[in-house]
Image (cartoon, rainbow, N blue to C red):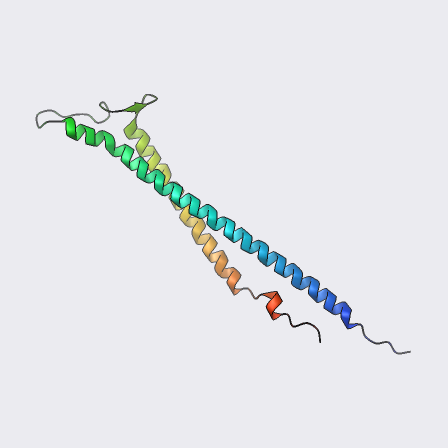
Length: 134
């Protein structure tokens, strides 16, 4: 009473493993793409905040330089625009500082996404390396 071995059971099991690895790899790739998109948005937002903050910071100084003469000195905090009672110089400086932190966070996220992408590329693709049970 000799029975033949069932090879198709092992093949089914191996196919299930390969499919699971492929799904995990694709999920990892989607996570990397999402991180890269967030990083790109944060870098641009931080850059724009820094530029507009620096411009807002410089406006009172430029107005004070234009209005001043060699005999008088103008205080850039006293003369100039204010928003909600706060001088635009302080608001611009705060926006520039926050923009720098957002920019740095975006750069860090970009570095993380690049290293994770490199890690993904070093992982063997299960669909290509799986030859089946023969």
